[in-house]
Length: 106
Image 1 (tube, rainbow, N blue to C red):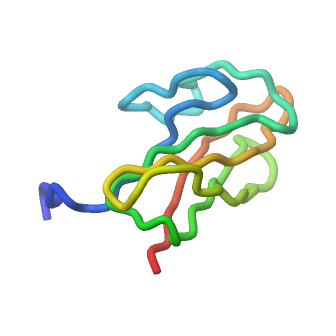
Image 2: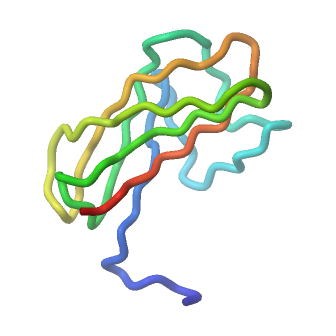
């Protein structure tokens, strides 16, 4: 399918560590989309469309070197049409990392 239907599920990170994620992130390890301070307790905000509040939403952090890590996201507000979620993640010091948000639907 070239163009998904309007009501297809969509999920994306909107804010990481207080910085707004671009609408169309490049996701390139050589030219990162954001320059974040590393460390534990980095807050990640997520926006979901057409995803129920009982979905399982996870954040997958993939450092350029080292082991990937997974973090659960918690439903904050909204409904099936539009909802917000939040996760607390860790970013390895001095290492560029990719961040993916995934939803498993019930």
